[in-house]
Amino acid sequence: MKKQAFLFVFFTVTLLIASYAVIQSAFAQTDFNAYKGAEIDDNQIDGAIGTEWDDAAKYTGVAIDPKGTATIWIKNDGANLYIAYQFTADSNNPWTAVQLGGNSCMEGGADAGLFGNDDYPNGTNGYVDIYMSGTGAARADASQHGKGAITVDSSYTVTVELKKTLNSSDTAGNDINWKLGENHTLVIIWDSNGFGSSGGTASHSSRGTALGTATVRSVLINSNQKPAGAADGQPEIPALTYVVTLVAVISLVVIAVLAIFLKRKR
Image (cartoon, rainbow, N blue to C red):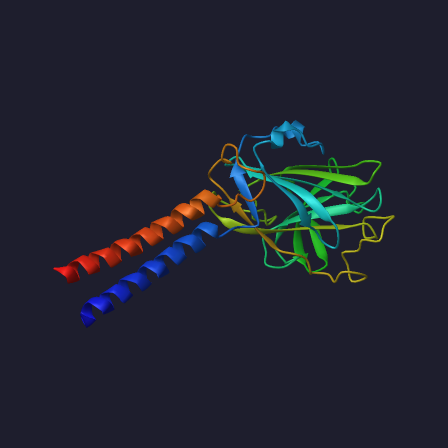
């Protein structure tokens, strides 16, 4: 009798632990899910959001540093990472940057794309492939990779598009070497108050937000396409899936109880 009770408790606890682990795994999320989608031609990287982003994950109301929120689109095609974002600045001459990799903003050695910075006048469409050489310092890559563009309209709406090779083999420029299925990090920042920008008060520097501080987010280079009919952005576990999981766990517990009960009856 005691043995049966012990087995029942042990079996029940084991089931609960296992189900908790499954549920936790199912609900684990990354900040950005770069689904696998169609290739975007270089000439479509023009600072205008079009249908080329329809198969990308879309996130709205994402806080960016040093202030404000953005709408973000992200995907990959197996060879390239695609990122687009749109936010409202406080001047017509801001700059913005996307850091790829690293555990802190402006981490030395991290790859990045810089947009609209007046100190880098040789960039094409306002884009320069750069890498971080330490907090407060960045350098243009000797070999420029990726395609990028920035536009700022009369309402100060900033639109950025970036196409970046997942692996260009350019180790000298610290370019990313990312693969499908991997999780990495990225940082989005902007500035309108100097050091390549003007006319505003947003300062990602020691004059405002301290250098090297910004929100580091995770991104999954997903090998799967965005599910048909899925809402834009981070896919949530449907309520039905949760219910089915819960019912399955309860059913297993009930079966265990019945099995022990029937055994005792014999």
